[in-house]
Amino acid sequence: MRAITLSILVTAALAGILPAQSPMPPVTSAQAAAVPDDSGSIQAALKMLQEIKAANEETLRKQAATLQQLDELEKAADQLRIFARRG
Image 1: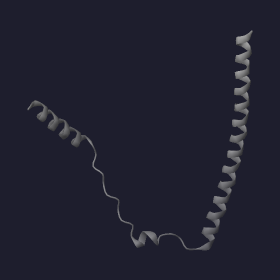
Image 2: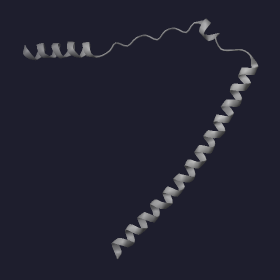
Image 3: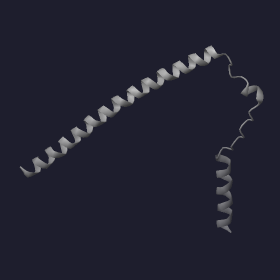
Image 4: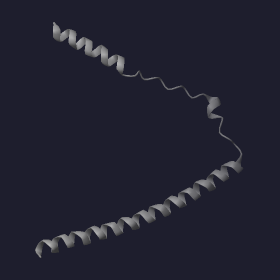
């Protein structure tokens, strides 16, 4: 009897602690039509995205070069450890 009462109390306590999930609001056609339609702003946004993409590619190239250098340093450190153990 105590086990049943304890499990009911634990379940009720957990149900009170856990937040309820709220439903997602529906997307209306007015929200979908809120996108600007002029081609000037679209072209400006496209140019900005291309600049961001180029900057991201440059960052990725730098990170790849740095990773290559770190791998070479790690290999050199491993070789030093091996030679230090022999000597």
